[in-house]
Image (tube, rainbow, N blue to C red; front, side, top):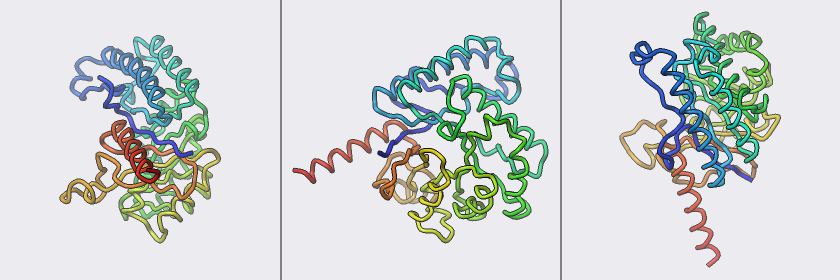
Length: 304
């Protein structure tokens, strides 16, 4: 069975669990206000998990903005930490009860293979805090609760950059290492599925998240099915992928090729594999619901 999900924002609910603030506000209001937003976000996450269950959506990526500016402090420094911890625990109980797969995708500033030691230090903290949130939810310390990142750079060449990534990997705590996955890139100067397989998966054994649009923009020498199946072969558990179409092809001819569409316009080809798919489309949950309706209409036409 193929399961579709979405990322971060739910457009069917009045709010989503990613309320944040600009740096100037954080500097003015500090960690007390960040704590208040984190509490509100955790409460909204619970409502979102319930909505997902009612609508038969079992794959969801949490927003990294759940705790605003958390890289500037420790989670335990939050004035409302105990309440935050209890809310996350409750969210995790619901997610497990409803068999929902929850993941994270920290931003592009997370570069384990950076040449800048300060960037590596910040990356280690950022990944540790993401795993800490997952642990507070009681999510599995495995790739079923993936923390998805990119290698992020090719400074000095791809071999040198991935070598730094591999060398820094042991610096991560176990609750990050057991969840970490890498994703293929959309830019031709960065990493294809084959390159990630050879340069990251082979030395470390960590899985590759196949991104359909990124492969379309940066395929290397592999066809879509070949690249997908190579990525799927790296997973020790049920694989998870990312999907979107090119906005230029379906919605706006002036858009960049790698921009994501609002909705899903074509059948998602899984080539017979049972996988989870995070749909990185701008209409979020609405796109999933519409895709299902399209499928139901097509099925009715075939059988009528």
